[in-house]
Image (tube, rainbow, N blue to C red; front, side, top):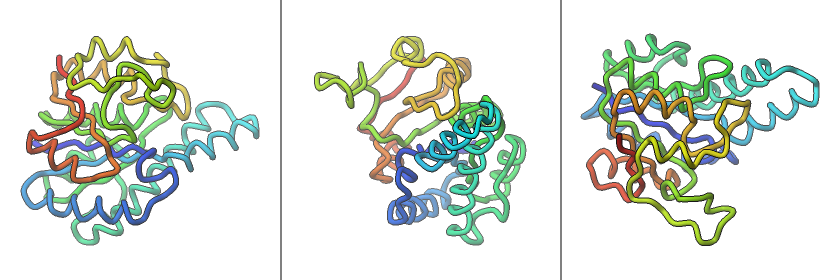
Length: 224
């Protein structure tokens, strides 16, 4: 069973950080020697810029979503090209395609799939499809806080939190183009059903993902 990794666009793409992407590629190559790896990347700042442009052009939310999806796939392609023969020639555009590629020993990198579905939800469906027992999400925070640490100086990082309690922290309870939260509400519902071990870490240090896989995370663990 593969390890599912979600790398937030806020980490590698806001703005695009080639040095950090290189560090992630080295880590994924190392992890891929002992584990099946499927990674879902977001589009970050560039995706949100295109969403804003589309909105200004009076394009509807579905069109805005499609633009963000293609930006996330562009980042996935960048990873794939850097991975060389260890990666895929084409970015997967379905859950089944990604799951099948992982069984063939490839390091799988993908982006979004369809309007109305965030990359968090893509990762959640991958967990469901593959039976993965671990999902690690790399974010722009040290973990999950009891309130937004960017807005509240007294916010406290949580070592653990249940999926149920996490839902109470959401600022948005439904999808909209460009949504940016620790985990998307729709994804949480899917993950809660699977009971998968989910860990949120600071993605600016890729080694945190390796630590999470080894059970040494300094982030936040989400439990049933």
